[in-house]
Amino acid sequence: MKGLVKLFAVAVIAALAASGCSKSEEQKNGGEVATPHGQTARKESVVVVPPSVKGKWKAVKIAVMDKTVNKETVYTVNLGSELAIPGSNLVIKVENFLPQFTMDGTTLTSQSNEPKNPAVQVKILEGGKEVFKGWLFSLYPTTHAFNHPKYGFTLVDFIPAN
Image (tube, rainbow, N blue to C red):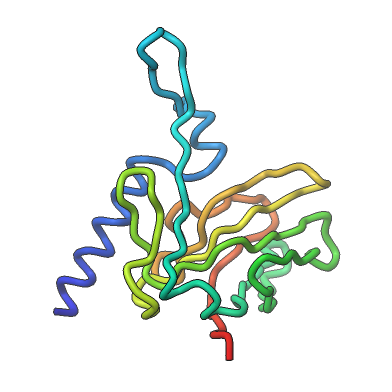
């Protein structure tokens, strides 16, 4: 059973890699599809937080690595809130947490409330400008990771609501 779960998780990650999930990747490939009238329309992903997950998680812990001094600091950020990274002009906004992330077409959701493939949706702003919109994966920290010259971000833990 564990092998099947790992195989499924790898398939989900492969699907993400094929579809792209960050703003910069959409810009690279256009992120557009043709409509019947020859116009183009952006295919947007839809995040669906199932009732079994909604309200069950309070916060996530995100490790921020300062690559210039090789120092990692872990911050706890409540879902739906933001954190200004001290000593930088970066702000991380935490949006949705999906404990068992899965993707079906353009729908991103969680198969259950069990943390089998934890992922958090974030926006990162630098100087007030959005530089990243995507997901941080606990089990696959390098998948679609935000590449910043000075900082790295990793989902390291998640806190249930009580």
